[in-house]
Amino acid sequence: MVDRKTNRVITLEEYIIQAQNKFPGATGELSQLLRDIGLAAKIISREVNKAGITNILGEDGSTNVHGESVKKLDLFADSQLISALNRSEITCMVVSEENDGIVELDSDGGKYIVYMDPLDGSSNIDVNVSIGSIFSIYIRKNDSKEPLTEQDGLQPGTQQVAAGYVLYGSSTMMAYTTGAGVSLFTLDPSIGEFVLSDSKIRIPDHGTIYSVNEGSYHSWDEGLKQYVKYCQVEDSETHRPYKARYIGSMVADVHRTLVKGGIFIYPNSSQYPNGKLRLMYECNPLSFVIEQAGGMAIDCKGRIMEIRPEAIHQRTPIFIGSKQNVLKVKEFLDKYAPERIQN
Ligand code: AFP
Image (cartoon, rainbow, N blue to C red; front, side, top):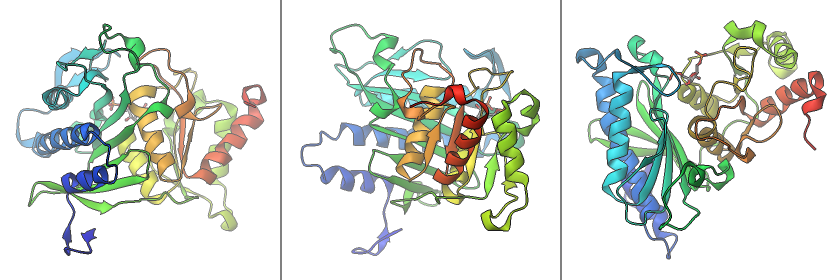
């Protein structure tokens, strides 16, 4: 996108400052935090792009808090983001997929709490498929003189002050929201800057793509099985059969859903009774982005962002995407499990 007055591209830095100037009382701290994340994202993007030609690919031999093997780039991304956030001393605490407990930062009264999945979809790294970083920002509620605990971070997604993701794909893109729509940036490698691609991206109300790991079909609830059958039936009026697309990197699957519409699903199943994806650093931030773009995100019962978290690494089922598609899957879920319906 080009600035009409100056006829030149708008960088992430400029955009953040312009947005901040619209709020005369703003301290500039949230803007700084977003710029810190943008800087770390550029460094991670550079390493992701040269992963195949350095010795950075592959597993480092350890496992993370969920027992999954840790890839070297995961650790690199984790440390880059933490040190970028540490530098400006406005973030008091980070919760990361890569760390079991909370990570306290060297801030003197810093009020922000950042959740992040530094490199989501990392099992795709070795096969050169898109991966991403996800972030979610909250304000600390209790007195900054009290010692920090996990409780400080256990806030529902509706309390997020900003959230977003960086997608390392055929190009590197960053999308974020502060609750006033979703802005999308593309990294221009020739100038080393994120430049504005869209300042108010909207998800289509209805899409013709469904995205779910169908290999797990037999472990799903009946409602979901019936919904997927519905997606596969021919019906010209509703543009069915829908296309099936599943990358296995939530950021990439949700980004496609944001741009093209449709639905991404990671359900509860007999294998994962509470779903697999993490509420605080995968589902809440991406739900905030999708809702701000006009879409919807629910678990089996209600809105993802209204779930009261009980643990920092909690999991949840998720159905996220275009409004009409999410409402339709909800119809099927409710029909086959009416006891779950929330009033
Ligand atoms: P990894 O980071 O271990 O690759 O997991 C990716 C992820 O958390 C999410 O990004 C995907 O949507 C989902 O897991 C894929 O899970 P399945 O392999 O079970 O389909």
